[in-house]
Image (cartoon, rainbow, N blue to C red; front, side, top):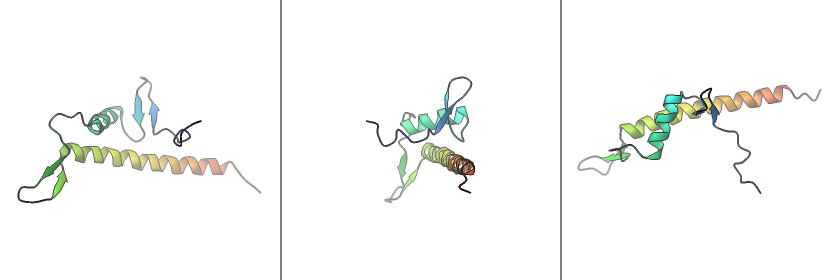
Length: 94
């Protein structure tokens, strides 16, 4: 039996060099995003605490990860909407 995500479209494509590239990102941005997302960036714990405060804000690495994710997510949503529109275009009941 397959899992619930097995029918989900892939969020990446394979480029001419055989690398997986997230939709909407360049190969370099994909590498950067995956590195930041894995938490393997030395000296970047993700959040900083303001002195004398309980406020948390993301550090530069976390801000960049979110920026890349939002770029990918926007391109992914546009690609999915276009794919749906194209698939409906070929189906006509009348």
